Image 1 (cartoon, rainbow, N blue to C red):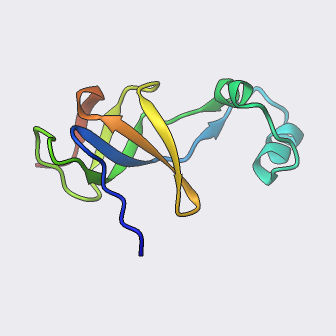
Image 2 (image 1 turned 90 degrees about the vertical axis):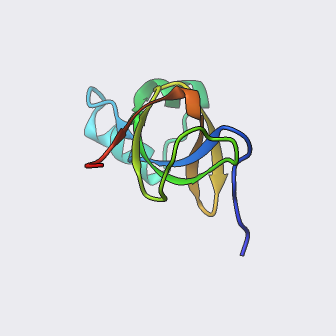
Length: 105
């Protein structure tokens, strides 16, 4: 089993599902979802609304605050790097780009 742990002040976050722009026709939305229509990354970013919320999977050794695996956080919408790992997209976010931790504690 490969283990993925970020370094320094970085966190690995599993983003909430991306939502396609609702102004697209249903046929186009279905074609994109099913992989029948493949868009260049620059257009894909414009058509997909990335949720600024995600679930923490792991965090680096220099993070200032305490996190738990599964904590939900709010981060800057364009402040992440994408990583394809274990058949899914993950975001790498620097701790300074986190805005809030959601929860009851």
